[in-house]
Structure formats: C-alpha cells, structure tokens
Amino acid sequence: MIKKFCIFGKNTIKVLAIALSALLVFAGCSGKVEEPVDNKPGTDTSAEDTIKVGILHSLSGTMAISEVSLKDAELMAIEEINQAGGLLGKKIEPVIEDGASDWPTFAEKAKKLLQNDKVATVFGCWTSASRKAVLPVFEENNGLLWYPVQYEGMESSPNIFYTGAAPNQQIVPAVEWLLENKGKRFFLLGSDYVFPRTANKIIKAQLSAIGGELIAEEYTPLGHTDYSTIVNKIKTAKPDVVFNTLNGDSNVAFFKQLKDAGITSEDITVCSVSVAEEEIRGIGAENIKGHLVSWNYYQTTDTPENKEFVEKYKSKYGSDRVTDDPIEAAYIAVHLWAEAVKKAGSFEVEKVKEAAKGLEFKAPEGLVKIEGENQHLWKPVRIGEVQEDGLIKEIWSTSEAVRPDPYLKTYDWAKGLSD
Image (cartoon, rainbow, N blue to C red; front, side):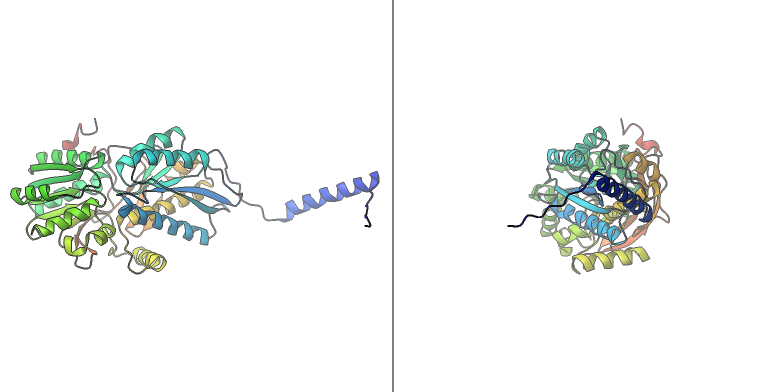
C-alpha cells in the first residue's frame, strides 16, 4: 500500500488562513442579505429555513365529524403561503396533534406543541371546553392560539385570537330574527358543557327582556345518541322554535329521530348554531332540510374570494367535499396570522399581536377586521335555510360587518351575565 502525505510549513498555513478568511468575507458580502427573523423562545424551528406551527383538533372521537375538516382547511392555507414563498424567508412546517375529543388531552398536546415543538403559533380547538382547557397553557407559556369557531363569549384572552363569531354576531341576532318571524315559544336543547349552557343563559335573558317564552331546557352529554324522550317532549310541547346547541355527532341522531317522529320544518323550526354544511353531510339533507342555521359564512356566500376558496378546497380534497363557516374561519386564521407576521417582520408573539390590531383581510365571507381591544373579528351575520342538496340558502343578513361584543356590553338585558 502506498500512503500519500501532504506536509505544510508554517508560512503555507498562514497564507491559507488569510486566503480562507478573505473568501468567507467575500461570500458574506456578495450573497443575498436575508431579512432578520426573531427566533425567541416559542419560535424555534427544526431547520433554519422552516418555522413550525401547531394544528390541534379532534381527529378522533365524537367531535371528529366537525374538526377534521378544519385541519384540512388550515393545511390548505399553509400550502398556499408556502407556494407563495413562505414567511420571512421560511417555509411553514405544520405539527399536527389529535385532541381526541378529550379536554385534558387537548391541554397535554398544547403543552407539547409549545414546550417541545416550540411552535410559533397554534391553530386549533372547536368546543369551548377544549379551548378553556388549553387557555391556561397558552397564557403560562405565552403561546398564541387562533380559535376558529363561534362560541358563547364572556372571554377575551391576550393569548387567543377568535376568528369565529361572538354571541352578538350569531346567537343574539338569530333569536331576534326568530322572535319576529317564527314565534315566541322556545325550546332550548344543547350538549352538556360550557358553550350550550352559557349560550342558553344568554338566550333566556334575551327572551325575558324582549317578550319571548321559555317552555323547556334540556341537555345531553356529548356523543349522546338516544333522543326519543326529548323528541317526545318537543312533540308534546309544540314550541315555535327549538334552539339547538348540540355539538358533534349527536346532531346526526337528533335530526334523524326528529324526522322519524314525523316532525318536519313545516311543523316546528329548529335553528342550529353548531350545524353547518359539513355536519349536514353526516346528518343527511333529507333529515334537516327546511330547518335554519345562523352563521357568518356559507358555501353559497356570493363573493369573488369565496368562489376561489370553494374551487381550491374542492380541487384539493374532492368535489364531494363542502366548505362551511368553521372551515372558512380556520382557513382565514392562518392567513391573518401570516399577514400579522409579515407586518411585524417577526414571529415573536408580542410583535405579532401588536401588528394584528386593526388588520383587515378580504375573506370568503367578506371583509373582516381584527378588533384590537378583544382580538375578535368584525364579521357579517347570516341566517340560512338548509336546502335539499345539503347546501344552505341565505335568507337574511346584516348589511355590513358587525363589531364583536363578546361580553354583550351594548345590551342592557345582558348586564350581570359575565359575572
């Protein structure tokens, strides 16, 4: 074997060192200078050219019927941003976790995303129970959650942006419209957790103040499937309106059993605030047609942005898929965060929050704006009727976006509700 040796003298080493230093200086000066990016705790990345974000939804369990599609919408928005060049020179890397329709699991997964994965932000949750479970985790770790679903209000966290409706943008106007157009006798039905109970507390105060009548109030556990007793109570009571705050796949059982009992929308109006196009697919349009819903967006909403959004969503996930309000709110949450990051020139939570104040975005639902005072969105309100094809026809809407009022401070009858 012939061994080859290369021997350098001291002078040769000095010359090489000087040459190498010059080469490094030249390379640093001649290359493109990247915009500086903050990488403080909570915005660490797995690689220098990526930034991690969390996606936290129920991908299994009773809430999967609603939440899987939110994950899909968020991934589509991330893909769009990455295809357009990413953010501040970085591509977005999603870290997906399953809350499994279990609130302690949501809290555990949120902690993992913030402390272990060090994500810049999280898009997630559906139920208020899951949101309240993760809220202290985000506040203790100074994380940032984008919550995409309508809810009961009475909350405003510096670590959450709420892209779904506050009660004055969904529940309150729906009750007003129903009293004027369907009748005064209300039967309240909901799942047994914080959102339905707080929503019904609001509705009862509203009915009492403006001439409505509460004839019954019933709750069932999440995932409940036997509604025969409640359907019989509805049949006997004959209310003008059943105001429905059931969540998850309980809606499938309820509407099928209601129809099987011979009760249609011509007999009694059911108005739902947690049933949208995605849930209608599971319920079956034949079981819910003619009944009403209250949201801020429908697949049929007539805006140029929505036409493009629906086409992209169906192209990516299949022509049989539908868009709906929470899907749209999840989608725009990602884009709103991205716009705030670009405006801030940083992924740092405090800088992103400051940049988000007053931020406007042309969403599929129309122009939305982040209210800096409470980190909710200005949104239009729409009441719709379920059609035979499972889509929703808008039958009433506000003329412009409504300012979010999560604590219902502008309603005299709501005083004391947030105590």
